[in-house]
Image (cartoon, rainbow, N blue to C red; front, side, top):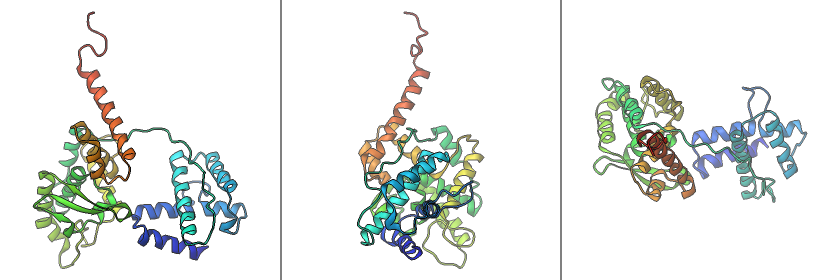
Length: 310
């Protein structure tokens, strides 16, 4: 089983071009960890049930696993994530003809509570972008990261792996290799262009020293920034800007999409810029825009609350 699992992880890295975050998440879902209470990984569950072979897993086993997680009050979103990892693993086993049937066929994930994505207001974005100290090399780098995230809607994995050859500073275009090795062009405005130009000519040169790398965003040792470090950078400047919300790189991606739609952008254009395979994924932002429109209406219209004279 260990050999098969190792080959599966290699397949995620090479065959699926999965992000490091996805790989870590799937590893944890399958292998489990003991950080928070009882073991909740899929493989430890099989051990507990004394199932010693992957081909002995049935639909009944999967349903038992779901109930095991529910009984331990695992969040619906986490259960869905774990099932996605197990489904992906068994899809791989089928692809390699190691198994004939997938026990997750016709198994549905728990119905999720509908949650609108969190995003920043324009005022919060301005405070966020102004937070880095651009008199220092790391401040110039961080300012470029924040500006680019908001200007382009990039995933954190895409930004972490960005190389200089992907950026066309003249046209303000970036060629991205996204999920599933799909290529797309994203755009950036003049503020992001200016921030990146300063960083590339000043800050990056000082951080790089005598080392060589094509990675755009690097640490003080001249090595490519990892995704987790970028997440910490985003959180740091959200706090520095006095923003009370929990802010992650994906929050900025949500903000990018929401502000585009609020400004009248076509939904399919936003879909293309985000790199969503399905329009359905992008449509959640229309709900966010409608919610914002309702708030503005209720706050601004003199008769919206029914306090006016008939």
